[in-house]
Length: 212
Image (tube, rainbow, N blue to C red; front, side):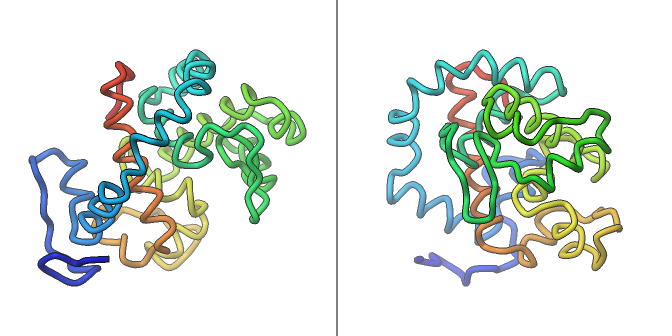
């Protein structure tokens, strides 16, 4: 990585406008990651390769997002960041499908007011989307914020217990700090995930999918 004007992890905030989202995200680390994405031109090629699958799934993505009060463009960005719209993806950590859900995560959804059968979640992409959108919404409630807050995206990727522990020292605490103040405590993979969601959501807004 080229740090271009500062070291990775520098706490100064850089932003192109005064929206809360940009104030959350535009730290030096984010600028480095965004530049790296741009340099390797990973965003547009992925969108082009996955456009056919996206079009096939877009109706279900919209329905799942709207049923849980999530902006469709944000939810599409989350799915793209997690699985690149690959319904059959299985991670080394045992996460399955479009939303990359683990058995532990699916079992936690009963706390969100709806239970899902894990075998159905891993076999049926529509069920996977419904469970993923419910989980994203549930995380926003547990963090006492909305789904456009990058803390929610980070917790989706890392897991709520690990996220809370990184933020405030206990899996049972409620993280009240802004994302910009806790991001350096998070794994690079999680910060990378947040940056991808941020960039992809902008791309999907250009495709007429409402986003944050």
